[in-house]
Length: 141
Image 1 (spheres, rainbow, N blue to C red):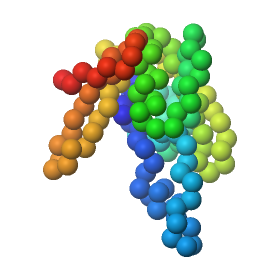
Image 2: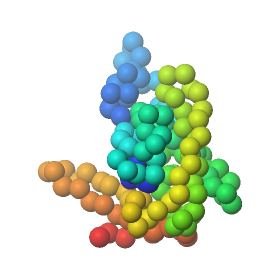
Image 3: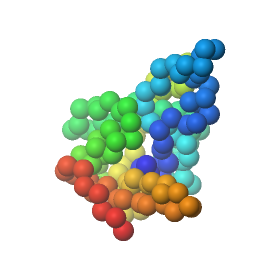
């Protein structure tokens, strides 16, 4: 998922492999959506050092109750409720020490659209824009 210049994903493979116990079973999956990249000149770029490789646990705004985020789908549904120009706050968690931090950005869908990006295989990607302010609707360009 792309949101305000953040590239987000479900649990990275390297973290998934590190969650294997000695018996080969998987320990509990960490909650949240992982920040894998911060794009240059994006609304969150000034906070890039504080966001990269961390997890987004909830999103909220001035008039919005914070919404817990467990999956990419949760985040897409939460983002669809915001309007262009509205300030969005995110709560992130450090993966190692569980310390919480808060960041804010203004939703700018003209320059930084929110979109779901799917890998279709064979090097093909599909991007579906999230239309804001209402139930989740996807528009495929």
